[in-house]
Image (cartoon, rainbow over all chains, first blue to last red):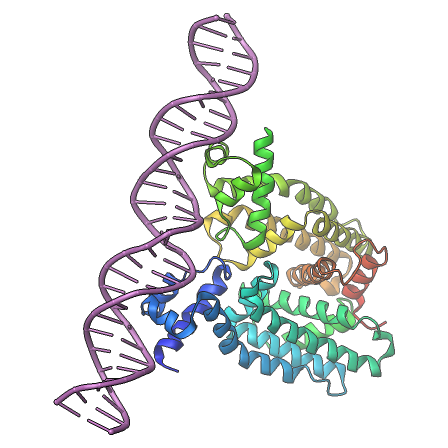
Length: 189
Length: 189
DNA sequence: CCCGCAGTATACCGATCGGTACAACACCCG
DNA sequence: CGGGTGTTGTACCGATCGGTATACTGCGGG
């Protein structure tokens, strides 16, 4: 991994996360990285190749963390707190990657953005597995696993958005417990 | 309103909602609308003007509906059901507009996309007002109005996404009550 | 020393970008 | 029928798009 590759990956992440794959410009990426276009094409072959490399490189760490945090440990509350904390942390430390994934999900599922959609699928599958495991202990959850996974993620994404806009403090130790409490018991009580 | 204007507005909505403002092509919009570029520039002046017109034209109806549905009627459950039903309905009948708004919120807040962000702000303000009014009847909600507004919207958006992917049936009469029940009382009970 | 290869810059390709000059157009008022 | 007025198509602008041919650099192994 040369420094040119690393700079291109960082610049690519910034460009793709700003306006999505289609609107990103390879010239901009190269200028930001401080290299010329042939360097980009030498390492990554195409804009699409750069996108895949960006997702693979910057997404590997967060994906590992999400996969670890999604394992059901026998208690719904502690597991969801761990997962929510991981998501919020990824949304804070890897903000560009997080936004890139959300952005990509809203766009058309072209072949180029497939790597990003695959990451989202893995995250979602892990959450569905979590709720499936939890449903073995809590029968009244059964049959709604995918809905729980999606709505949990929706709630977390809303809080991530609040963190981005500065409306809540992501380092507040009460944030994650309150989020999970809201998910499990609602806004009352 | 000539038929050319209407076709341009429809084509513009489709193009902007696919990949966002930056990635949309005026040539594509004109081709889809079946008119030449000078026609677009005659009516709307610029790509930016077309975007503003698209948001104004296709967003007026949904904005009115959301504003009406956001008025607190004295009962949290019925108000939230009405609002959630309105959001889900807009997400179904005006899918492109809904996706355009979500997409725009994730991108940089450039001057061009300001009209879309203003619509989102109005929707959010209405929801905050709703929860502020509700907090007068339920003191334990006080101080969390903006968090409730954001998380309610996040939950609704998650369900809208499930409707788009076909995982839930948006016309199911149980959907809205279950959504609101989950928001108010959590996934248990 | 020099060969060979990975890495990089200059300069360019055809295509498309947002935007426009201009002429022909339909159509309504007189 | 004449003459605007408002709408539209043809053809074009400079800039930028993704991508590339080619040559030059630095550097490690014979």
